[in-house]
Image 1 (tube, rainbow, N blue to C red):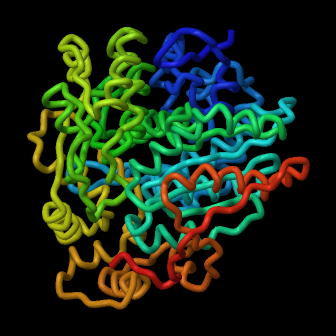
Image 2 (cartoon, rainbow, N blue to C red):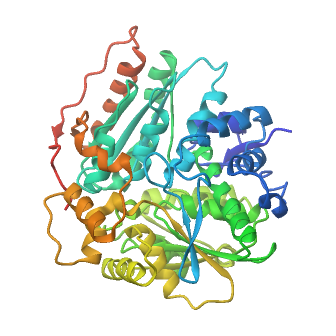
Image 3 (cartoon, rainbow, N blue to C red):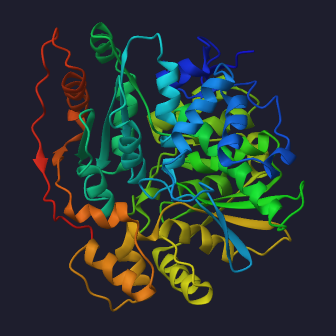
Length: 516
């Protein structure tokens, strides 16, 4: 039986999961959801045996039902068979009396790898027989971009164009993207913040004239952000797998609830936890953990989503987001599929920058979700305290969630913090937290000093960045992003029967430019 997806904003034009993955976003600007995705619950006992790969195939089979078992097995093997440094893929480790779910053992040292090693495999299967080239276009606040570049580099019939906010990612994150190899990749910085870049990417997906020009050349745009169901679905797996690890270690009995503390900005990672709950995982509460850009925390408290606020550049830059796209999916499910309500709320957000959710819908949301936040000062203190008390080194995003956990009274449930990045992706800030007097010239010197101070080793894929040549230096204003995408399609796919778009004029940044 095929599971059909449709937009959060209408029931028209249903598509299969393969089509949803290829399109990325619905034609009306909504996100793809499935009303039948949660009909077949996962047996918790199945999580006590087997490998991460086997768990992934089983759970993805429920969310992506028109993929055959053989297709999913192949996708999973290629995604996880040899690309992660931990045999467990996403190991659970103790931190004091609680636990970390380590999601950073992939090729780019961030949690996005778990999904973005899988998405190219799913997309490759989905496009078989389609005949069109696919250009992945995504905005990133730091981690999605590199993970998408690493996942799609060299993939036949696919290209990837990544936009990131200029000056608002760490220098390691910047160099991860700027040094990316591969003939089918494009990287461009955008003046403004992540929300500016993401909003323009959404507009590009809705540009029917651009779509028509590309379609005539046999090319279609798709997304690698968590707005793509093929990116979101693999994230559900590690919630179940973590539960199985805890059960096998005797930390809980099958059926015991678990609380998850999730650092989030775009609401994708924590929404995956909600999907896991809908599929039968005993989730107690999902804590939405924010930095100073606390629009989600305010929403959970007031029922009003208001992006009309100052943007804060913090030491946890991947969470510096004011428009949390995946919240739209939660609004759909919490309102029992009220597409008219969701469409109206999204219209209000686009027009006025604010919307208010009806009380019954908020009551449903609050049954599962709680909010918490941390200042930069609190985040630094948590990094230092966690290291001094437990010998565990954590990055600033993980520390935001750990701060919220530490401020929450235990309710007798097992508590798990999603650890979303290697601390070495943010060496400067972690070093400052441990030694406020530390001085260094750039992020790589900070990396060396952090390793010496803690007697730990940075991942080779991060420490090796200093010797790689910079390929991408382009910086553009938001209106030029369409030209960048069209030019990238021309360059990657050699659309020789069309007039080659002129690359936009751009500024550039230095390879040595630092966010320190």
